Length: 268
Image (cartoon, rainbow, N blue to C red; front, side):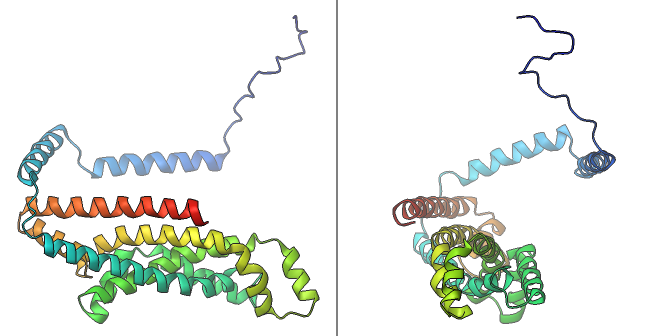
């Protein structure tokens, strides 16, 4: 098949358009930050080799794991699970009113929506480790500080997805209930929440997975759970005990992720 001079093959890919000045500025900023960060990290072959040797020493001292205090590790892991479950339960329940206030189709006033979205963004932006530090100062060491940190972190995570799902709800059932004389609360309970229940359940399960991993790190700052035992073992250079703790955490987290996946397939 021959083509005239003014014809092009149908499968010829389009040419790249010239990037705008804004895209060029973003790329320039990215490369500046990348090279600046690379130089600040002081990466050198000597440091990398020394780090590899230290890692080999750590692994050599950590294996085989020390299971002599398995009862303490088990109790700490159970405490971590309690923290995650209690924190996520309260966090998810509190996320629902936040999501309703932050959604365009359920908020009572645009200013309330802006305020609710700002609060959700604030809780999501501040890392859970910082929340834990704040609550350790407020309520002292222990699981309560971790639970409060998980509650706020869960609200920031779940309320955002809840509000997005609520805004995607089809207006048909809501309009039908409104036309029949139903009030705002009846419309929310009868049309909006039932349609979003499956999505909310999936997000809640993801929140539990996230909270279990977070609860481990929260213990490093004194917020209870198995993280306290891990921090103690590392500070005392008891790497074999630390290895046992890490393996327990690994088994529990992977096990719950698999359980969560089964629940989502069977129920949702």
